[in-house]
Amino acid sequence: MKKQLLVGAIGIVLLCEATVTAQQPPRKPRIDDTIKANVYADNSFKLYINGELVAVDSISFVPHNVVSVDVLPAYPMTIAVMGVDNADPKTGMEYANTNIGDGGFILKLGDGTVTNATWKAKKVSWGPIDGDMKNPRVENIPLPKDWFAIDFDDSKWPNAKEFTEEEVGPKEPFFEHDFKGAKFIWSDDVKLDNLVLFRTVVKSPPDGKDRPDFRGLTDVVPQGGGRQRGGRRGGGGNRGRN
Ligand SMILES: [Ca+2]
Ligand SMILES: [Ca+2]
Image (cartoon, rainbow, N blue to C red; front, side):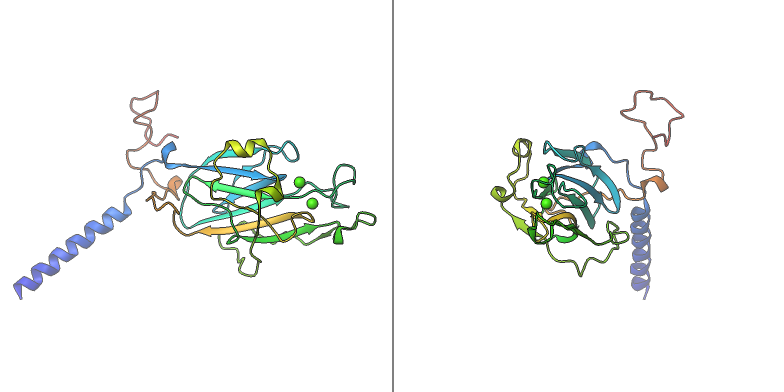
């Protein structure tokens, strides 16, 4: 009986310690907690991660460019992208309505996340319908409300379609960045679909690396307080400064 009580007491102590450990605030994230996001779109994109806008293509038309930025991951990670193929909103064409341009989107994150046909893709603007350049017409559907949010239901969206490098024909900066293992994606018609929304959820880091979760950091005092190390000003009175 005594032995059972003792075991019970030890159990409670361990439980309390585990709870305290779980409730300890995280340390401040460092730059080596971030992962690189390499993104290329024909012609441009907006990238949302976990509901927040984290990158906007800095060049909306040409030249085709790679945007390479640091992002702080947290899993499960919801990635939502607006892909834009340059097109006149009335005709769906470009270069003074002489050409039907094509789209294409590719992304690779430093945790091994890549674009492929497991992503969802929803077209929201397309044309010229049937490729008719003589009587060009465009069709649009409204942007779904909160399409980039974590809890948005994309279960009815079709899957993205993969396109080869030859089909998309990426320009030079693409080859200077790491896109190994990633596929070019779009909705079904890479020529006529001009505004496409993509979504995916990365449940855990594909490279298997354990990464701290820094969400909610603005609501707590991180371990070690403010800038005590690495800050140039040093000294007291800087606790919690950012
Ligand atoms: Ca097009
Ligand atoms: Ca294009």
